[in-house]
Amino acid sequence: MTTRRALLLLAVLLAPQAQADDRYSTKDVELYSVAVPTTELTAEAAKNYNVERSPTRGLLTVTLVKKGKSGSKSGANETLAGQIYAGAINLRNNLSNIPIREVREGGSVYYLGEFQVTTPDTLRFLVNANVMGKVMKSEFVREFHGAQAP
Image (cartoon, rainbow, N blue to C red; front, side, top):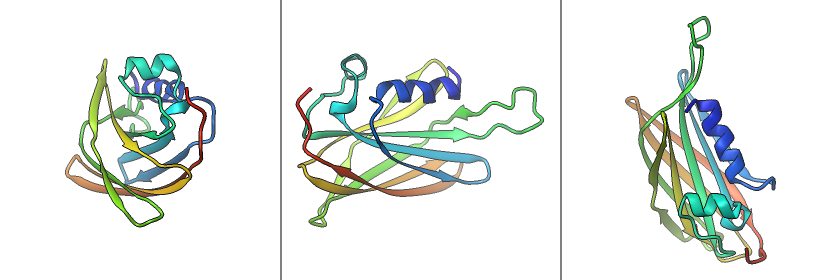
């Protein structure tokens, strides 16, 4: 599966609602992070990835992408495997660890982590990745509001 297809799959996983996301880039690697309430997942996507759709749960998706070299034959980006560590800090300044699991489909790899959220709340996500001998750090904020049950 190409990187483009993997990122398209990520977009299909998520309903067309506003999402909080972040991108961290080095010379040759990009780290993409997205956090959404699981109620924004389609029922099919939740089932396929074994994710519980609930107003009190969120999903963090992390993808590591090696940038393609311009002028190379393919010039294509590819997803990379790495070590991912993630956590979230709520408005009461409580830190919670987000367990991450690796998902491989074809030649692509990405990471999913489910977390609890009590709405309304604002979470600050901290994502650390070790990939290709590089340490990458990303931080972004997402507001979670009361949602309807799926």
